[in-house]
Structures are given as structure tokens and as C-alpha cells.
Length: 180
Length: 180
DNA sequence: TTAGAAACGTAGCAAGTGCTACAGGAAGCC
DNA sequence: GGCTTCCTGTAGCACTTGCTACGTTTCTAA
Image (cartoon, rainbow over all chains, first blue to last red; front, side, top):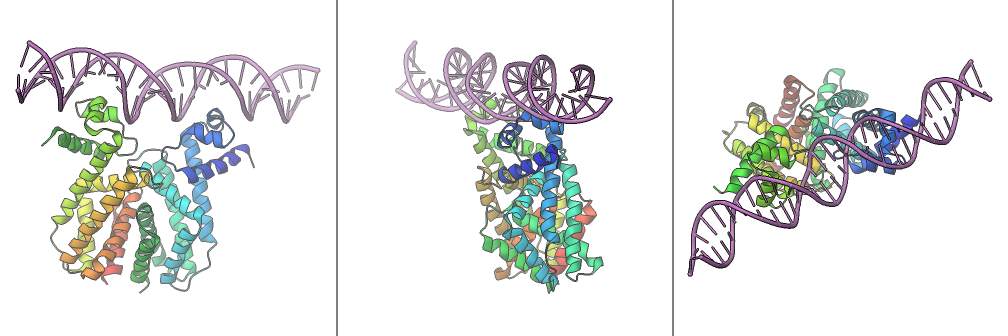
């Protein structure tokens, strides 16, 4: 593994822990045992570092979905997905960072907008594939994946507000509405 | 109206146009025809200014919901709410700023976390009241309001990505799933 | 062995951040 | 007149930001 790849993984850990908004090179570099100077040397600019981190984070979280056992119904699939989101701290953090990146890209600011675009495409494909493995028809899977993704992200957005029970209730309402 | 109130409204306009993340006092003050010095004088700190702006933004967007005509069914209520979100640029911008504030508050950072907490409580009440006006039972309204709010926010989060048609499709799927 | 490239440390720049110190003008009250 | 209180302009502080100039070490290939 190249030095650059090592740095990406370590930087991703740091960003997942400390947040993407307000991320700055010097504290990051200090934690990584290097200097801002070297980060710029390896990545060319902060923007390219951020792009690499977002891609790495997305790859990590998709692996968790790909590893899931298929569910027996759409309703159960929604609940299982939520369980994956909440039970793995890693997935939660990746999702949180996605939300931060999306907020940063809301006005079209780069590299966030482009990174979000790329991540979202892959993410919907991943969700859709899981739904199809769980018996959802190919024609319906992508639409349902989009709805689930939007709702999950919306719940995550208000994460600091509500206790887990309230979030859980929203997801169950969605599962019931979808799965009949 | 006091000088401070004038400043809050003008600052809210500015923040809605330029975004909340990365908002800084000097450009804001320049647009308002004053100085960072005076903003600090009137508000005490940037954090208090931000709190006031978020409150003002929330008040504005709630007024649009309160002004809506009741819908004939839950399904139609969801579609009408989405129409209000998308047709009024003011509401869109307020929602966008809410998303930014929520992202900033994701790790508990103040004053964003507290502002989001306060805004969300009022917002759910507002949505819930509209749903009840539209015939949703009092017992069910708040839960549905939470689900709608989460999904709408999730769709807004990916705003730069998808064309309006795709967003619209997600909302229609939600409306169909909810309204039967 | 030696040339060249890759990797790295030190120091610094220009710009921007929230906020403050200090002074002065204006308005009202006795 | 004096005196206080609100308001405001000028200047600056201490700090952080991404990034760069410059020189040195380390490694590799001929």
C-alpha cells in the first residue's frame, strides 16, 4: 500500500471522528504524525485530500451494506438497514460525514458537490442491490432505495435532537408504510 | 422596530442567500452597511447573532405552513407540503439553512445544536397542526409529521444532485405509501 | 559511484477570523 | 453648564487558514 493510501485511511479516521466541517490541515497532520506541508505534497491541495477521504468513507460504509444478509420482506429490509446504520459506529460516522459533505455542497461548492454526487450514485446502487437481494422487484428497488436513503439521512440530520426511540419510531413508520 | 431587529432581518436575508457555513462577520456587515464592530456591539457575539438569524428563518418558514389551506387527504397534504417547499424560494432557502445548521450541530457544537433543537420542536408542531387541519387524527399527526420532515430534509440534503423530477418521485412514493 | 528523483523539515506569507481597546459624537437629564 | 448613556469609527491583536520557497536528506537506478 502506498504512502498516500495510508494517509487517506488515517485521514478518513480523523475526519470521521472530528467532523468534516472545519477540518483543517495542521491538526489533522499532527494526529497523523506528519505536517500540513506533507499533506499538500502528497495530495496537491486540501480539496483533493477531502475528495479522497469522502470516497474512502463511502467505500467503507458500502461494504457494510454489501455484507448484509438478505431480508425476507421489504419491511424487514428497512428495519435491518436501520439496524446496520445504528449498530455499527463506523457506519454512523460515515453517514454523518456524508451529511456534512452534502451541507457543504448545498450551494454547489466544490469539491463537496461533486463528491456527493459520486457517492450518492454508488450508494443508491448499493441499497438497491440489497433490496433486490431481499426480494424487491428490480423495477421498484431504485425508487424505494431513494426514499429510504432520503428518510434515513433526514433522521440522521436531527441526530443530536432526539433519543433513539424517536428515530426508531420514524423508521418503523416508514417500514410499515412501505412494507404493508 | 429596534435597530437590532432590523439587523436580524437583514442578516437573515444575507445568510439565506450566502449560506450559514462559513458565514463571517465582515462581509455580512459590509452588505448591511455597518461593521463587524457594530454587529458584536449589538449581539454580543457571533453565536448570538447566528441564534437570532436561525430563529428568524424558522419563524419565516413556519408562516408559510400556517398559511396553507387544509388538504383533503393525507396523500394530498404531503404533496401540498412539498409544493409549498419547492414553489416558494424563501421556504427552500430556510430549509437549506436548517440543513446547514443541523450539519454544523451534528457533533453537538453550539449554538447550532440548541438552535436546531428549538427550531425542530416548533417545526414539528407546525407540521402536525397542518396535518390535523387536513383531517389526520391527533394521535397520528405527530408521528407522520416526523416522518415527512425527515424525508423532506433528506431530499433537500441531496438537492444539488438530482433533477426536480427525481425529488418529486421520492415525495410521491412517500405520499402513496402514507396515504394509501 | 554518482546523478536524479522522491521525500521531508523549517520557516514564512498573505489573507481572513472573532473580538477588543480607545476615543469621540450625539442625545437626553439635572 | 456638566454628566451619563447610547452609539459608532479606527485601529489593532492574537490566532488560524491553505499554501509556498528553500534547502536538506534519503533512496534508487545507471
